[in-house]
Image 1 (spheres, rainbow, N blue to C red):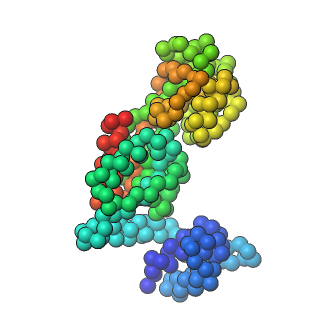
Image 2: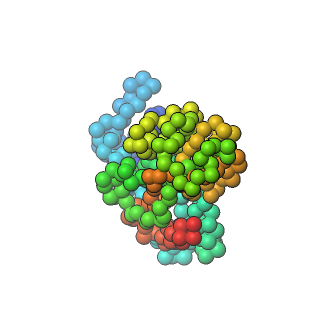
Image 3: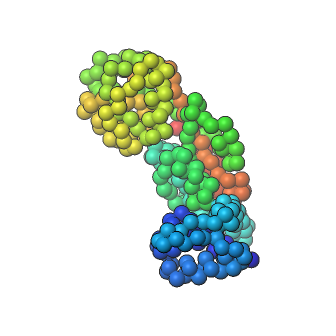
Length: 299
């Protein structure tokens, strides 16, 4: 019989590449990891790992087990949480992952309301940008992923296996130094900024910026790139370039020394909360999704 604890160890070994690294991640000893892997291989009746010197790789059977492990472990977590809620043992636990501008705007409002309504529910938060946040959800490392995607950058069917809770549409706005010739303009065509230096944001936003600029007939000269929105605002405020940022990001940062302008053509991103079908049935997860929806309606 294949046990869930053995699958967790196999996933850790596959992710880290060694027994010692997996032991550090799981908070146990290397011999314990080795023993559990031997037990799993005994249950499976076939080798799952090939050891070559210091390197370790999965056999075909090992790859199959790792591929199924995320869904199996997520289903078990969902079952444990739902049974616990029904039995009245605890209100629940939710592991949330969010991109930074969501963490500073939607998440605080949602979690404050959740705590007031369900004080026994425990929520943890880590930050990651999509697509990494979506990978974490599929790998069983979180219960809800707050994510975004741009309309023109969508991959057909990329979220078909997930429960998608639409939250809001977030428009990108331009950010220019106070002394910029277009600082007082109500609306700016992005091609009017073709001669400026640019400050780019996260990799997905950066790719979207390049695509939009190229459609407008120019390639942006990106002098600075940072995932930190306050750093983008600070660079613009110091007169070092222009940028486009999501409205959610502007809400969480005081744009000192910079002015916002409406950029045409409009570029929008879809903000959603994602979870797995099994997890959507867990009361604590469902309540968190509801509060994120309410927070987005007030944003």
